[in-house]
Image (tube, rainbow, N blue to C red; front, side):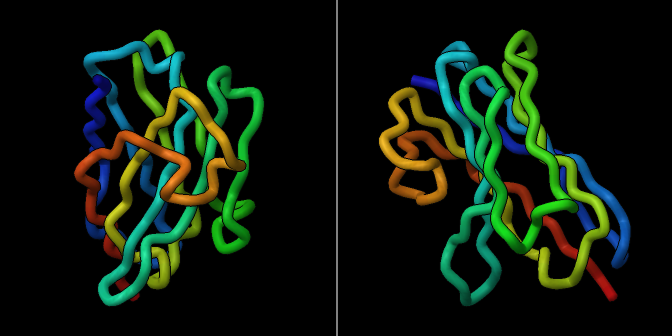
Length: 125
């Protein structure tokens, strides 16, 4: 069973950039479609971005489109989330998720079976 570990979170200022990484172990990442989700205090978990197995197809939430980029390096068993022009409303715990058998569009939590613990991103104004 694949295990996922996120890294790269931190405290940044408005307009700054961060790159999150999701490292997989216990399985070949190329076998999984991947997603990033986030959850702010007192709010529901929300979809951020999705990438298919090869990296040739991506989806983004409207709130991050044009600012965030999801990518993957299957040879390194790692998926990334490049976040630019960060805003205070991007503050949340960011988690990566994996699925071998995507049945939906990859925009719902229920589309994924495996989850990391998350990494905190705080954007200060």
